[in-house]
Image 1 (cartoon, rainbow, N blue to C red):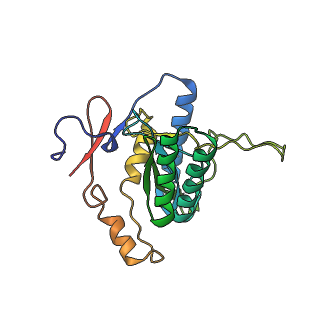
Image 2 (image 1 turned 90 degrees about the horizontal axis):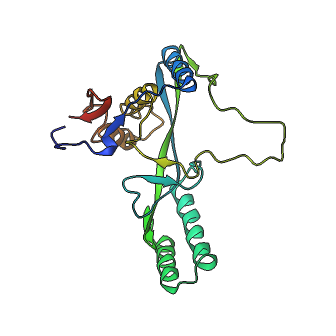
Length: 225
């Protein structure tokens, strides 16, 4: 960690903890059994969504709905509409309305991946879909996975990502910490990805060729070169 004297930045830290909780214990055991049975990870490709960062949130970001869009421009259009309707329906303050509409104007003329309005940063964010695989088989659902789907076809399905806070320094269990470490070593290799995409994936600053995880006596995993 030569580039970061003292405390490592949050995005390079995985804070591993243990909870004395029966549900936690069962979930951890289920996760480790799955990792042993399906040890490899395959990547499907990216999806896109929206996140916001309000005053006092840094460095955390809060997701604004599902990450289920295949193209960044569709998310920019969604953000454009969100800001426009906010300006029309949710504020009477002229300064706030000008700020919101200025961001709308940028999105109408630029491929902007981040805009700010009324002190809030909005960002188009990217997430890779991945799955575990072993012996040529994809991992099926785990016994501890949430599974609350019922027979009511008219019931509203809750969004599991809306409002989710991306907080790299938040404490996680050992299985999730190990899983994150495994994801950090991934890079696109399949021929279906263009050569420049594969090259960009492999030379990330903390990518496969340079990553060295370390764990201190407090259970924090950090990454350096």
